[in-house]
Length: 168
Image (cartoon, rainbow, N blue to C red; front, side, top):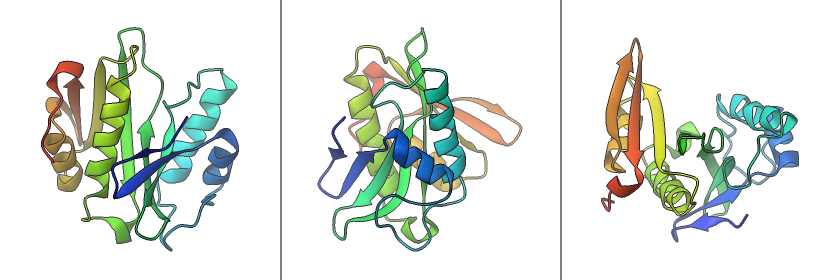
């Protein structure tokens, strides 16, 4: 699986050995001082566990978000699992605190959406966030996602293949 890039960031796919490093709280590539962030290890363990049940499909995993200007990992993004039988998969993303507010999450989501919808097995992308995470909600909405449900402190968003946004 090749890296995905928009000229500002590059999404570098995480291989199984790198996922193990992330699960232990270590970044396998040069990174900003405050990465890995709090959710990285849990995300990497999810990928590692999917390998154990033979549910890993290249491309539908974790990517490291690398800022091309300095080559440092700023965060991670990716698909939680391959598409289900309905063609749906959920994405997630997280940035080091020092990288927030720079537009990297939106860039990463747009790259994932473009790559994902180029795959014949994917027709719907889901995103879920905390109801009070205004920055994450802005990212999803700016990338064309529509809120479909709220439960307690969580909100779910959906993007259908034909609904992709060209907004930046």
